[in-house]
Image 1 (cartoon, rainbow, N blue to C red):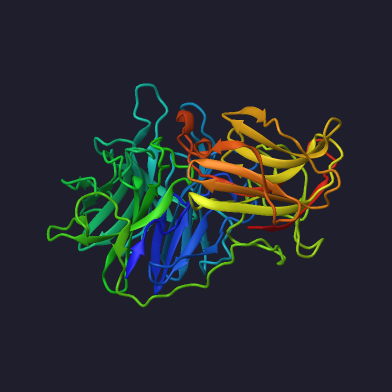
Image 2 (spheres, one colour):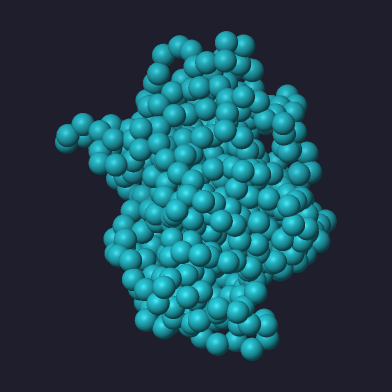
Length: 520
């Protein structure tokens, strides 16, 4: 049996993995999407299912107004003496040389919660990891951010003791490493084995230079020596490899003493652009310990594999989730996300009309505050997304439909609206680096009670369709370029991935609603 990579497809970056008994958990970043942090569960490292969204209330996470690719960065899971710990960074501003951010710990008796009110840690940097030493003491590791001129922005990894009793960091702050020549040292994870403290860090940035480097020390506070054959993992210099941006690792040991490392990766469009609209995904590699106490990929070399030997564990598949959501439950499933704000009855309800998702129109697709959007990650280069809606706009300021969304600057939108020239109609809107454009073909739907909408994605090509009955489909708008919905498009420095969703806007402020029958 082999593991097929990526194990978490689509936007699932910065994986932090732990094992508790026979259960494996991975926490990943969610940035501006709510609820914050997504935790997946497995019993065999082969099959994974979404299990929990810990930061599900405003007291734990208030994302309103945060910039795109702000919000939750690199959460880390740990477990000690019957308690789960989750460290997370909340980035509220990332413009220019500064990083305005806040770091917290929350705890729970179960991976599914309830999660406690947060404990504030610090604001010195991001990527926090809580290490539980064998003597009972606990230490927080994070990267240090330095905004000063002629200084390295990534100023090394620092550590400080954490007191659960006092609910705060205590004692001196110490820098334990400044990293290697690869630079951009972040994402610290700490493990203890055979008398050594092992420090696994991400290096090289989140792009094509990304890597994972291992260090070790006899003392928890260093000095840490670097593996002489670093990095442990990278795809740098191999642009043809199917898994790019490999780095930011997290280690887990199985019940049988086998070791694996989950890590970031991305899959690029086949057009040679290097763009990866699916975002940074999570893969896994088997690793082995050498006689002199260092880790190596079991397959040799430094490149990640698409297929990895599965551990010696009983297979444990989970029930397959249906592709179509009929909105026949009272709450959204774990795969759904909203932008910045929690789903509540003031703007989203599954109860007012049985079998339908009702969204009340609010702010525009440019808003960083109160958008009425519900979306899911796009996980494949070949897929179709479909919905059916009922919507009766009375003004050009009222819109509802199907959206493919990266952020407020880059998205595609086929929507129902109304104006004096076309009446009730369909049209396609494209936002490319913030430039708004409407496709020239407007389709009149005056007498339609229901509009069926679909997006077909075939690698770099996107085409929207519409239908009156969900059977006969007609294309609308031009063929669009999927690369626009990628992190690297036009050199922008962003960190998420493409989502497909449904949304409603009412820029008059009258909160006109739309009803969605399903989303597939």
